[in-house]
Length: 281
Image (spheres, one colour):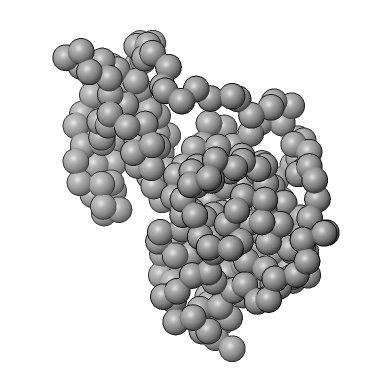
């Protein structure tokens, strides 16, 4: 068996336990598939009678003792779990994992149950409740994120067997999805098919680096999520209207000085964000 080394932050005891979770077990599926095919790590599907209906109740929970280090590394790439998931949204490919991991330990220390509505995510706090929408068939479900993964570049979430069946991902193995976190005590919002009219954001103070301007909100969210997964800085999306056209501006900050902005620009360049413009608010 090949062990995938996960390097936690020295400052947190929790990180040392990630090796018992998702990243440790991922190697089984990778060895079998050669990293190139989907779905990964499934094993034979079990009867669907055990799948719960409805899904989990969204409730306020403390962060897990395990699975929330300052950072960890898999395949030479460093990930920084978020401290707060409020307002997080992301689009990408979902996959699922099943029998091969059933009743094994997850990164949070909990036991993986393929018949529960759970999921794995690289940087969301453990646990976090997420509404997942299958963009290919319109199905929606709420899952509780309690594990780490998937560690393939084009994947954003690994669903349990139960969640994959409910969302229609079980058959094809993968699907394009949208993720939105849900705060305890709040029901998922009913979203209109078209974006709401844009309103200018309130005045801010300090310096910011603008790293992107997009007409499509999902592209702005994708860039924001990439940055917050790798850096500690705050990132916000500011809607604006430029020459009668609506845009979503991605700003990193605030920063106290232009020198701090220059240092941040260098860090952004190192993670592949090449374009940045200083904004003085």
